[in-house]
Structures are given as structure tokens and as C-alpha cells.
Image 1 (tube, rainbow, N blue to C red):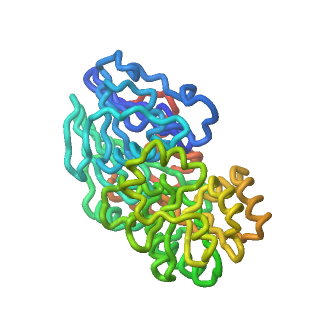
Image 2 (tube, rainbow, N blue to C red):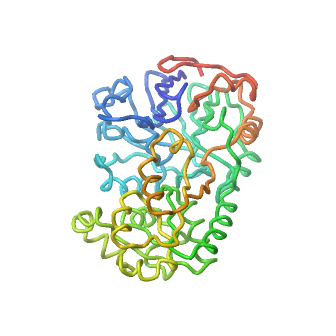
Image 3 (cartoon, helix red, strand yellow):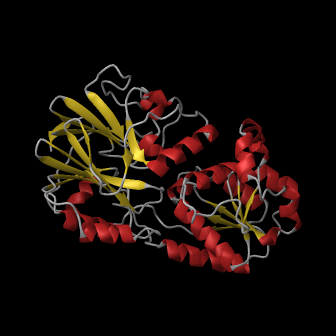
Length: 410
């Protein structure tokens, strides 16, 4: 079995790996780079058969529903089967109508079940569910021709599904020839904060804030939404989400995940989403039981916590909801440092609202990466999804570097 990293050997985001065995091929992830302006077609890797014309391409396996792992699906022929988690498939489908460029229908393929293997031509694939900031995320073991490659995908050990990490390390697959290991945090100095600590800090802020609390995090970070919801329960607030957020929560299919028909939840449809509401009346019928108006928020803002998105700024200004308010930035600090967040920060400053940073990374620190490597004991460790692949040798044994576009023996 041969492998080729098409994107990811020296960058974070846009992951794509191709495997080849017995004249057949298999893709793992087809992501859009994080900093990809303009036409996504410019970032499609040079892979034969994405248009369905080459039957040697047997399919695509998506590790989890983050854009930088599936964002180029729109350039894949519907004739190419796609595998992913069952809930991940629903989440991508639910998110698509709200995207600037909605995806076409995802091809049917293989539905992952944790630790249950399935065959794709000469390849044997076994998914392992992991703790990550994306819901329904997986690592993948691929076997063919007597060789075993393990693709870590994105993972951590500090989320609400952290037992998955410890269970995996206690009972890992054996005889791994090559480990494709994500290294998002390698070279970064980031505090290691657990999701439970995020919940605690949120609750403390909610308690001392007299007005509205706005929390900006990805709505697809279900762990984070649960943390905010639990903080609301602890401080007698109602969690408010928009129509997109409500659709994502519903798509998890998990009755233990907060939903907008729960008493402690509410749906607010901002002005920018009114057209979506009219286009998808069935969504409102299912999710709109606890819909509230801007006037209800502005009449008692201290009663609510809002899952914020920049589209809310105009509404909150017109509703005069910001006296005594607080704002929580709950995402990677890099977006702020490189200037992506300037417009929101200017808006907060104009309204006299303080920004508080409360976040837990979706990616493993070096210590947990080392635990995974120790558990798997691979013959070689291949860097992927890292801006600092040269630093792997400081932390792991048997590191083998490969560039984008280079084929190598597993």
C-alpha cells in the first residue's frame, strides 16, 4: 500500500490523503484550506477520478464534519461513494443551506460504527470514535496488502468525550506500520483547558454579568454548546440560538443534546435569517416552539445567553440590548491575532462591552500526542496537519517526513 499527502504535510487545514493498493485508490478527507479566499475550485488537489471518470477511485472517507476536512465535497462526483459518521452526515446536510455555497447532496457510501471494520475493494477500514470539537469524529485504520496505516484525524482528551481517548490508549490496534499524526498544537504555546473548566468559567461570568451574555463559538462545537447550556442552568439563564444553530443541534440526533423545544432554550431568528425561515418552513414548524423576539430579549437581557454570530450585531444595536452586557470569545485566539475579528472587536468597543476569552482547544497537546504514539507503537510517525512538522522529531521516535504530492510506501 502506498500513500500520498495531497495537502497537510506543512499546513493546518485542507487535509487530503490518497491511498493506493492493487490498482485501486481511496481518499481520506477532502478539505478546504482554512485561509482559502475566492473560488474553492482553485484548491482541489490533482487527483484522478474526482469527476467519476476513473473507476479505480473507490471512494472518500471523511474523518469528521469540519470544513477543512470535507469542504471540497462539492467538487466530487456523486458517483464516488462517501463514508462518514451517521450524525456527521446529518450535520453536513443541515449546515449546507446556510452556507455561502451550499453543497450538493452527499453521495451514499459507508456509515461508520465505532471499531466495526468494513471492506472497500482491497482496503479494510476500521473507524475509532474520538474526542474532538467536531461532533461524530473518527480516527481511521486502513489495511491493505499486509500493511496497516492509522490516520489520527483531529482529536483531544479534554472534551466531554475524553473517555474515548483513554479507552483507545488502553486498547489500541496493533502492528501499525505508519501513523499519520495530526500536530495542530505543535509549536504553539496554548493553555490546556478542559471543557469542564470552560463550563465553570462561563458560569462565573454569567453570575457577575447583569445584562446579556454573548458567546461566540462554532455551533458545530457541540461540546461547547453543552458547556454554555450547563452554565445557563447553573445561573438561571435561557440559552438562545439562531435557526442555523437549532438545525445543527437537531441534526446530532442525540436526545441528550440541548434542543430549542427544551424549556431552558429559545430560538431567535435574526434579520439575516428571515429568508431561510421562509425557504424552510418545515424547520420553523419543528424547531420554533420557543421562538422569541428581539423585544423579549431587550426587555430583560440579563435573563439570556446568546450563541452569538456577527450577523447578530445589527439586531442587537437596534434592540438596545447591550447595557451591562458581556462577550465571550470561545474560539482559537489565532483568528483575533491575525485581524479576522477586527470588525466585531470594534463593535464591542463602540458599545462598551468587554471581551472575555474562554476556550478549550479541539486538538491534543504534545503530551497526549505522545500517549497516542506510545499506545500505537507505530514503525514510523508521519507529520500531517501541522505548521511545524520539523519539530516532531523532538517529541516522537521514528519520524518520517513527506511533502505534499509525494508517494511513499506504507
